Length: 512
Image 1 (tube, rainbow, N blue to C red):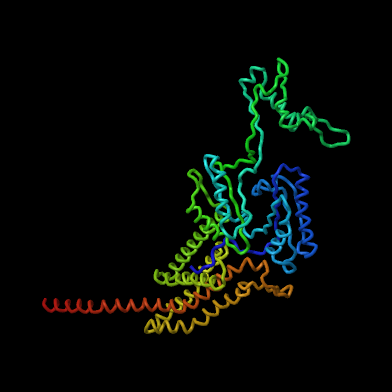
Image 2: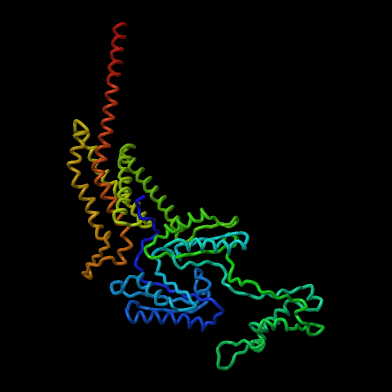
C-alpha cells in the first residue's frame, strides 16, 4: 500500500552506452555509413564541447549486429563515458544525444545505457505466439497501441516484417516439362537478371584470393520487366519463360521466428529514467485483461519480467531453506520447539523493519539486492535472541522465580546486544547513504557507482537489524515470561487435583 514499487536490479550509473541508428529502405553499405556518420558527428561535436566521453566506436553493419537488434537497425555507436566525477549523469548525456539528433530526417536514434543486471535488452518485452501466422501482425499492432497509451515508455518496437515487396517466381513444373525445361534452367535465367550467374573463378597474379567470373545483363536490362522477356534454352530452342512461369509481388518477410514450434513476434519498449519497469508491466497486464487479444494468440512476458520472476522464486526458496536450517540447528541446541520459535520471531521482526526502511528512504524493493539482504538478516538477527535465551536458561536454575532470572538477563545482556547490533548498523550506515571512504587515496566520495550496488543490501540490514534488536529486547523476555506464567498456571491447576487424589487414597486406606 505504501511501498515504492519493485525493481529487478538497482539503477547503477553505467560506464558504457549504446546508440542504435535505424533506417528503412534498400540502402547500400555506403548509404548506411553516411547516415551513421551524421549521428557520430553530432556526438563528437557534443564531446568537443563537454569532454564527457572517453571513446566513441561506430560500426555500420547489417544483421550481424546481434540477435536482439531490430531488423531496421543499420549501425551502432558504442560510447565509453569519462570518469563519473568529471561528467554529468549518464541519463543527462543520453538525453542530450537524443535532443541533438532529433532533427535528422529518415532515421530513428535510440540511446541506452549499460544494463546493471543481466543483458536482457529492453525491460518491457511481450512474446506473441500463434499457430496461424495471419493473427500475429494484428496482435502486435494491438499490443503496440496499448504500450503507446501507457505513460513513461519510449522506443517502442515490434518484430513485424518491414514494409517491402519481394517478387516470387513460381514454376509450373508440368507445363515446363512440355517444353523440355526445368526449374534449374529457370533459376539460372533469373540469376542473370539479379545477382549474376557464376561461370568460374580466376586469381590474378597480384592477388591472394580468387575472383568470381560472373555474367549478368547490362545494368539497363536488370529490371522487373526483364523477367517477362527472358527465354530458356531447351532441346526445341529458346522458349519464353512466360509460358510456364507466374510472377507475383508479395509482402517481404525478413525472418521467421518460432518458439516451441509456433510462429512468434516480439513487442518491446523501454522506460524513461526513474520509471519502474514492473509498474508498467502491471499496467500492460491490466490493459490486456480489459482488451484481450484475439482467440488463438498467446501473450507471454519476457525480458526483465521473466528474469525477475525467476530471481524471486529462487530467493524465496533460499529464504525458506535458510529458515529451515536455522530451525533445525536451534532445535538441536535448545531441545525446545517453543524456544526455537521465540528465536525465529527476530526474523519476522527484521523483515518488518526492512519494509519500514524502504518506505522511509523512498527505495523500491529490489528483488535481487534487497532479497539477498533479507536472506542475510535471517542469519544475523537470531544471535541476539540466542544470547538472551542462553543466559536466561543459566539464571533460571539459580533464581527463585523466572521474573528475577529475566531481570538479571536483561541487566547483563542489554549492553552486549545493543553494541553488537549498532556496531553493525553504524558500520553499514556510510554505505547505505552512498558514502565511499577510500583509505588509500584518502578521499571521501558520495554516490559513487561502486556504492550504488550495495545501497539496497545495506538499507535492508541496517533497518532490519535495528528494528528487530529493539523489539527483541521486549518481545523475547515477554515470550519467556509467558511460558513461565503458563507453567505456573498449569501447576496450580494440577495442585488441587493432586490433593484430592491423596485425600481419597487416605480415606480408602483408613476404610480398609
